[in-house]
Length: 174
Image (tube, rainbow, N blue to C red; front, top):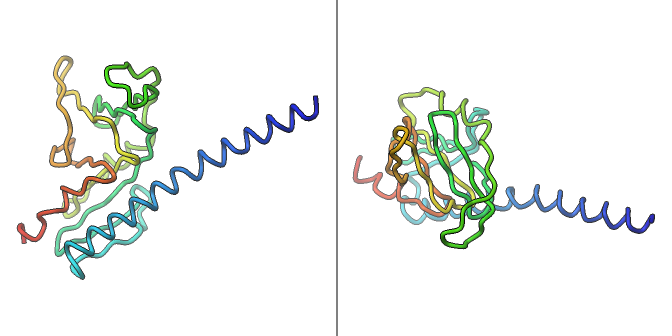
């Protein structure tokens, strides 16, 4: 009986360790790939630093354009559904199987502060880590749109962790 409890304790400890380390690893991977992209595209004309503001994670400045990046960890192969400005639903559990309904869902907590943050000189960006299967936004009760990085979602942009199209043409806007 004691060995059974030890095995269960070790399994729980491994599960907790993996669930803590995996999001940190994804976040570090995103940061390094973003730095690599910015270095290749803009050489010395950008600044990326951790934010002092608790509402978001990174301050990014490319030329004169400023971005506030909020990194959100979601389950693998999850779908993000934006019901309104502060109610975001994460649906997950079907894996990569096409056509299968996502059996689990949860509401994203902690997005309200960032969504209500107002600063006219900063473009707010939500980064989904790892990338979402799809991101949709309800327009009204029966209409939805698929969200891309260029879609204005209540004054912010939403991008997957490996999709930097939002930052590609900054020098053309100078």
